[in-house]
Image (tube, rainbow, N blue to C red):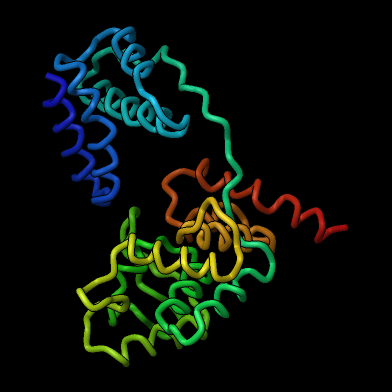
Length: 264
């Protein structure tokens, strides 16, 4: 049964300590496949037929493909059965340049934040450390050290360096509150959507165009700045918690024009 195979696969991901977000991503991608194929296919035709029915952005269809590829690779590795996806080529997915910040835009965001310390802290933290919004929202009082932050993310727990300004803003937040978590609202810990709405308001007030108006844009800005200033890919991979260097390599396209300008 397809659903039983998916359940076993998800359990193996949990055993590998993948984040709840990653597990949810696999569940969402694989659920429609189980519905359309109650019996796990042994031939590529059924899988290709399923992918052909998937609609939406090319990135969405490609994500479906990656989830299925992980499922069938797991089956092959565990049971030694043939992989029906071995001969299926991935759907075409044009590479998009990641949205980032241009020179001066971080300052405009901070000006737009005005006296809102929480908004300033979010902007400064994400551009200074490159951590994910979800990781920022997990920060607790005890995670703020003298020069580093203890971050819990997809790749487990690790420490990242932070600037004195970032530390000052975070300490201001926890000193004004008795809450365990650094970022919280009237109804408890902030959600990722709360942060998205906050940042979207700042982007618009600062006159920074879309389409990407969330926290990942600030994370991209960190990655770009790291490479422009001479940082290496391997170190950036570790800092950003990427499981694969191929993910980090996408940041190379962000800094090309800046690197050329810097060396002219």
